[in-house]
Length: 205
Image (cartoon, rainbow, N blue to C red; front, side, top):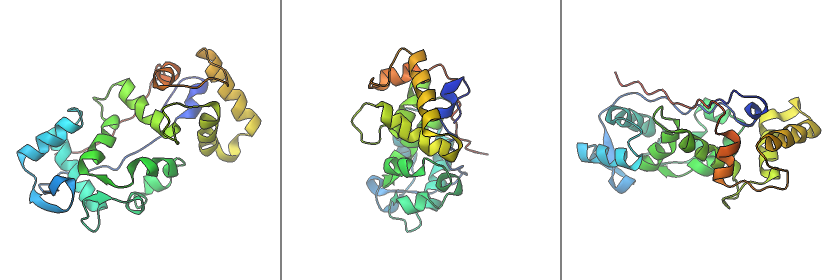
């Protein structure tokens, strides 16, 4: 995902979920141990769970990728298995993302990736980003929360003083201060016009 506007661009980073390929496979019972056949009913259930943001062909494709990551057919993907994806492991936000994806069953795996769908709206995409920033899961983001993510993203390329200056300016442009706590609606206000591009390619041919 990319943000391509003014100073807000520095706060979001490319997140490339794994690309899937088509397969006819089996689905975990109750999204647990793999045993039952991936039926039309199962596919429709997963599609409903992700608010129809993926087609049925895409869901079947994602299931193949899920099975590849779930090496021991446990019915869920562990943090170590997610880290086996190079694009994920190299992402500077990988440790924050692991808190969101560790232990996901297939239905929740698809729901997580649904924010990357071309059909997802801006609020759904930014909602995922909000959860990356909201590391303590209290439903609000402080100046320091954003500063910590910015430090992860910029590393040695920016000084602490530069990071704080950029962040203060971004918040000021949206009508907030360093003392402000951003709820999801506030976060959308700050980043909602950023031209966000965050999609996953799922070949189904």
